[in-house]
Length: 94
Image 1 (cartoon, one colour):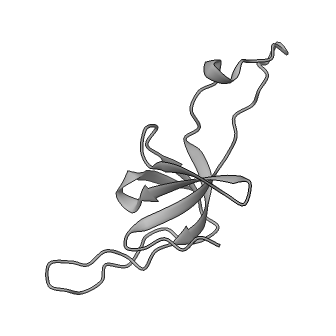
Image 2 (image 1 turned 180 degrees about the vertical axis):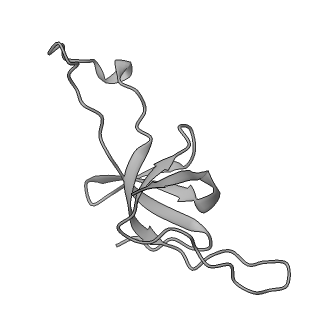
């Protein structure tokens, strides 16, 4: 499994629906970029100026909303993931 470093988070991207409500199949370039996913791994946190580690807010299993154009897409063992900095996560879905 991938292990993020620092304040990075690995998110399993939630795929968007390929059909509209009316049943029309969308082309891949017409779909909206996903902004929701499940956290699968969390780094240990960034370091503050005083050298102490800042704990992460999110944890494995959290469903999160993230900034639309943030992160780096990664494919690992056939699965799509997004590697983000914690600051790019907008909210935890409860």
